[in-house]
Amino acid sequence: WDALPGLVTTYCPANNEPIASVRQGNLEDYEETVKKAKEAWKVWADIPAPKRGEIVRQIGDALRQKIKVLGSLVSLEMGKIFVEGVGEVQEYVDVCDYAVGLSRMIGGPILPSERPGHALIEQWNPVGLVGVITAFNFPVAVYGWNSAIAMICGNACLWKGAPTTSLVSVAVTKIIAKVLEDNNLPGAICSLVCGGADIGTAMAKDERMDLLSFTGSTKVGKQVALMVQERFGRSLLELGGNNAIIVFEDADLNLVIPSALFAAVGTAGQRCTTARRLFLHESIHDEVVAKLAKAYAQVRIGDPWDSDTLYGPLHTKEAVKMFLDAVEQAKQQGGSVVCGGKVINRPGNYVEPTIVTGLPHNAPIVHTETFAPILYVLKFKEEEEVFAWNNEVKQGLSSSIFTKDLGRIFRWLGPKGSDCGIVNVNIPTSGAEIGGAFGGEKHTGGGRESGSDSWKLYMRRSTCTINYSKDLPLAQGIKFQ
Image (cartoon, rainbow, N blue to C red; front, side, top):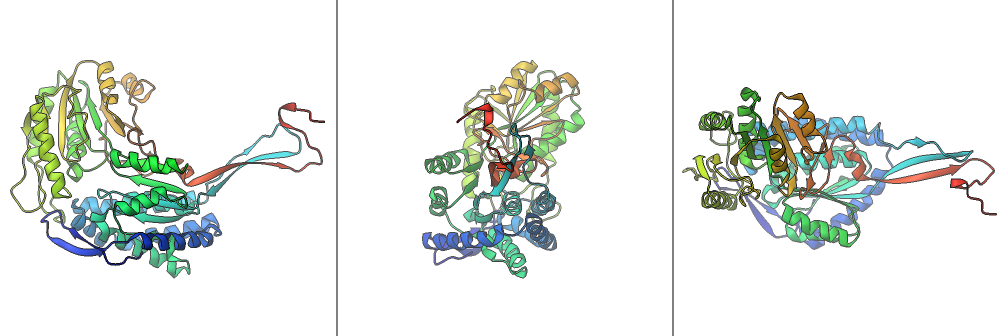
């Protein structure tokens, strides 16, 4: 990473005190970094995939050794509680472990050829340079999902983290660079440019960026997608989510209450998989709301680095304003605030975890993703209507139902069920495992990261036909003589 004058101050969300000033890169820095990354790729692509996996294994071990201090830095700069900060680093470690095994498994099939003396195979090669733009809410894990998989596929990476979490970006990059350099490899295989929208725009428009992975808002993601498509480039989008939990009358409420609490309040409502809508069958609505409000009252609010804290601050002052605006809109549209709805009187960007009832399923505010701990609780009567309500928002990231009805579960998982990329049963909308593909449909962007066959997005596929005979038969039995 490199930078010239142009300082950005990062602040601690728990008290709004400055932490450090970080030099931001300009377009000249970006240009130099891309050149170095492309040169480094030539070295990296020649290394066999299992050997690349060994380097990624070492990166995972280096992160393990610093997991608590890096988790503390995430808490300090992003604002999430310490256990979530450590958990985020653990997620990167887990993806490294996963990628090590994957490095010996990626590849295409040998297909049967209809022509005698011919072999038909699929060859997978790295795309080249993968740009990764990440958001403030997961300043370690999302880069980990991308970089670990991209690296074993044979790609170099260029990362632009959120300007408000620049210290985390620098710390992670230094850990990776040391591993690379200890193995006599160029640190530019995993490059970093700290910067703002000018750097992001340059990445989106740059034809040397063979894949651009963008995590952020739907609004900005659309701009990125259009810029990348303008040059016929390849993008991987992880955008917003307006996620719903549906609770049927036969649900186990001992699972529902802690699940809804974690999904709505975890990370102060700043996960892309945060539950923002809670659909309750009318027969259990009042009971669940009462129990959930009681659980909300017991949430321990405090400094994110305090081990007893369950709930920390929002990331910025702007997020607090968005929270207040959303609560006011909910009231104006007919909602009742059951609990929360106010700013907490203490230093930092703290707001009360909030439950709103009484709104219709199609209220404008219910269809608006607000990155804050606001849960809209809505009544329903029938399965068919609530499945439709789950799908009526523009985003399609995560969803969950709570029921014991086996038929309903498989209808939920089927073609007329949830249209989301993550479809859960009897667990929260958040807290995905790394072994599955992570991502969503519609305005969530359609991209997939982490597990399953997400690795294919970081590679290009060639269908190769090899004639090892002395004849030249044509496909489909065509004669050309």
